[in-house]
Length: 397
Image (cartoon, rainbow, N blue to C red; front, top):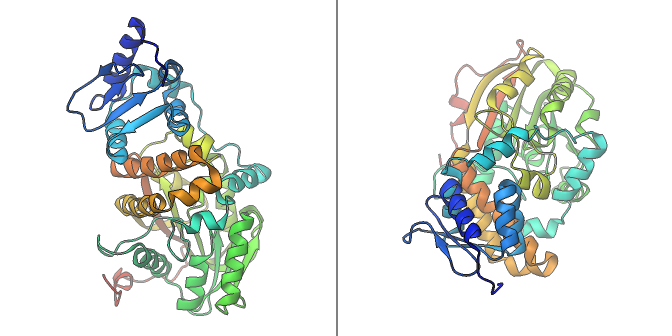
């Protein structure tokens, strides 16, 4: 921490920053100068004047960078402090920055998508195994009750998706973006489906293929290391769980064309995606440092994606609170294994991913982010008459 005294204009700027962006938190400068309520539940500690300037000029990007670098500290419960920041009205500087920011996700060309996915998902299976469940499911879980374990909730999510899709034995299923393969294997093992799953993450595909071989399912599940745009064939059902965020708004039509090309005339499908209530660009820090090329669509954008190909939405569900709880489990496990993460990637990485997980909890708690799950079908699809099949005989329901 620098020993130099803050200048009068810096103290004035700090007061404006605290009032405009963190009215319920206290801002502390490098020399101990404080702005904001003394009884605040959390404090933001700015450790040098360069960090203060960056927070004023480009707050959305600078906050994460400074936190990762250690020049911005948070005292108190990190999630609760971030919830306060999410609930604060945007400052004039933030509104100005947002007005100049364009919608992201435009880098998702075939080569761009491969680079983007590599940066996030190919950090190593060993890293993700430290804090995900045993099946390595890296999407929103479904908690039959709030006390369910993460493993129980992820199994329940896989079954929730399978039931929504109304998978029958022997049906052919196309999965676009399969992660580490848990859903594809579940559909084959528990519902007798034959699944073709696409993914461009080498690390994930390697893990999924090995698991399929180990479980004796490699004759029913084919994991294809290729771009979703290259999917071919005719399928009874199409599922995409956690990939739409990486497609980008400019490629929604392309994804729709793939679904339209591959789905039988009596087929049905499911889209599962992080989303928004209204169109907004991704947080710049998340988009640049964690999820390059990401864009969280609105419910209407997802509906438009399907509607232009005469795919009718049958069911829409928002699992926002389930994702907040999923992330709480992930963050708890991450913190228990933080030494192993630090040994592999260093302190800055540890802080960046701590902020990513905690910030995501805050975003879902405050409704800044949603989790949309849409079921759709062709007009000739045979579908259940009621929703009874979603709940009949479910353990823990």
